[in-house]
Length: 176
Image (tube, rainbow, N blue to C red):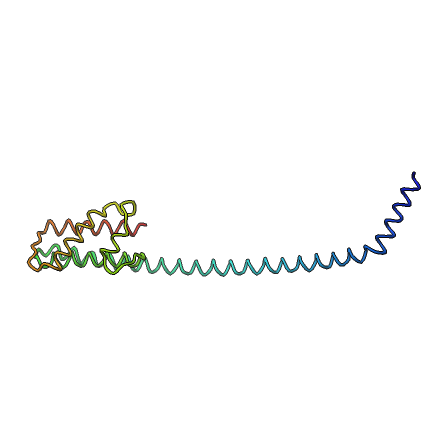
């Protein structure tokens, strides 16, 4: 029995060295080439990911700079509007509301809301996105009355209320 096992083992080794050794060598070469290919592929993907991350970080950095400059510009515009309210004339109240409406509309455009006018953009906003959307509609209606009804009378209280609505809505949208 021991002899038959040794014979089998010897026959296997003869077969391996004669037939399979070349085949195993070819498999080793193919495995090595495939491993090199995979390593190059992985390195290439890592460089592309790194490049994309760098590009995304640059976009984010630019948007932060733009948003900071936009916020500073916005603060100046709101101060002009508040100064108009303090002047106490009907025409200044009307101009203040129109300017506040324009500021809010510009913000909507910057945020990507589409539409031909502010009304169409406002229709895309839900109460979940902006808590005072109903009040904002009322303020926008006052703006429309100012624009379309030259004899429309506006009190300082109405004007202040409308401006407060626009300011709150602007602050809420900026925080999104």
